[in-house]
Image 1 (cartoon, rainbow, N blue to C red):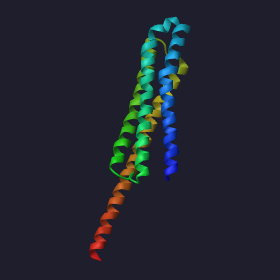
Image 2: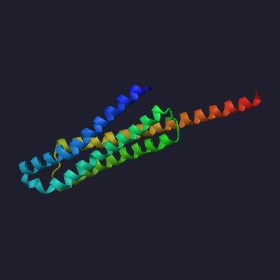
Image 3: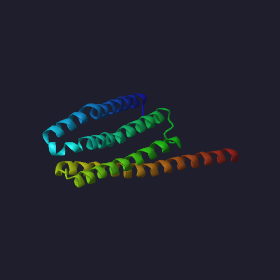
Image 4: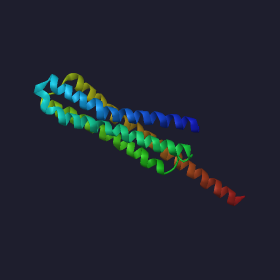
Length: 165
């Protein structure tokens, strides 16, 4: 992957990260205020739902940081190293956390009597996406292990052949 591609991807990650921060700091609080005014019977849920919604976007930010670090490894031609595992493992854990947060918020809204079908469907989709991301990354991690193992074996065989010659 060329330096230009890595630079473009890092710019896109930065823009996405900033968009999530904007949603967390501006849009979600404003939407919570509008919800509290339009449905006074649910106004007591404003703060907990706002906190859970903001926390629900933190995994997106964590994945962006992990992808940034992996892109840095790509630019240094070191992506097939043990250091990449830490970032991939973090993204797998983040996907699981995101799925659990979505499920927890969904259950909490149902118990509180505020579970609207559209919101519940959205949270189910978020949970499925988080779990799917974790599963996909787990499979990619297995491929990374295989690539690193193959690369190490090839170096070992090459070194042994050098000794024989």
